[in-house]
Figure 1 (tube, rainbow, N blue to C red):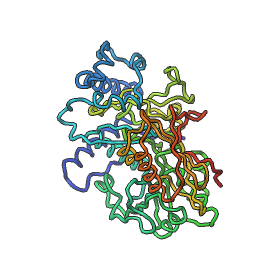
Figure 2 (cartoon, one colour):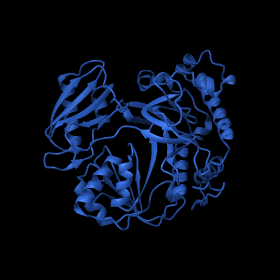
Figure 3 (cartoon, rainbow, N blue to C red):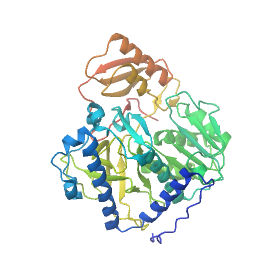
Figure 4 (tube, rainbow, N blue to C red):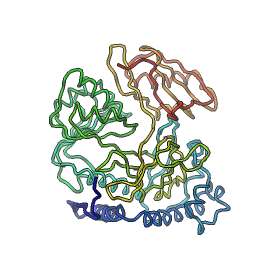
Length: 454
């Protein structure tokens, strides 16, 4: 494919003249320019931000003050940066209070708390700021502009939510696509359905609202595609499906094109870091959002992988001064790629080898997206790690890694949460483990079905 001429993104002006909209518009203009920088310019910009966040962390984070006590920030280059210790999820659990900075720059806004089970089902807590929230919105808008959607059409999302909202058959209807898109466009209607709904109910819901754009989790989308194929259901209005939260396979991309006649667009993000990479508008690989994060792919010994070599993904947030995440092992595996034909200098993440959730199978033949309610688990007992395994149609094993074995009351409480969230009275057996290992391919699945999927 031929490259694209720089600075051709058409950035819409905000509908209203609020200060927050003006700030977001300014950020979009900066992103529009920086995506066309040379690779050397991009690296210089990252190094500038990297030195700032590391220096700030040494000043205001007791954890990093000790970890980087011998580091000369003024001499920090990418080469010696890659020699610094890796931050693990266990570090975030054990040293959370001392990792957080004791104060923030005035212009970074209010803090907010984020709790997530992440890609390894190891619950962690981080703080974000007004700045990280604004960056999330700006990159969201960048992704919208890259893929040139028709915002007058209907948007639908089938995604999991821990609270019982958007349940089948009705779901929820919204007057527009929500923030930040509605700050720049007068959009069509938006719809949401909780992915705890049966696949048959999801298909009926889609047939009723007739969306042009659909967002869902890859495993849920695969189940929709297979059932639509089985029933010969078509969605002629559908233009694009967007996926989030799991690994996208070539099979899924092809099936979406064949069954739904829709282009598949994926993006890579985590709650604790934000957007990491978004799919190129001309190719199926991803562009790392280098203005916000620095991404490394490394071998088990910590050395950098070559292009197209699978390794651990490490992420450094360049803008979060509340909970600095420096060389953070997010638990996923991926591989870097070569420079992109689209002309953008943003580095290429060729493939993400993250986890893939299996679909929960019910005795009546229906399949559902697993809903664990891990936050409720943590209210009952401090868990280090968990994994849900469906052994039989009527039996669930809950594997736990804990510092101390739970009491009978805690076990009963967690079992009840799991049964309630899964929406079926499964028999639940709790087993205790020193660690829950990854698969041979380096993946961690927080839900594993031992039942063959048709």
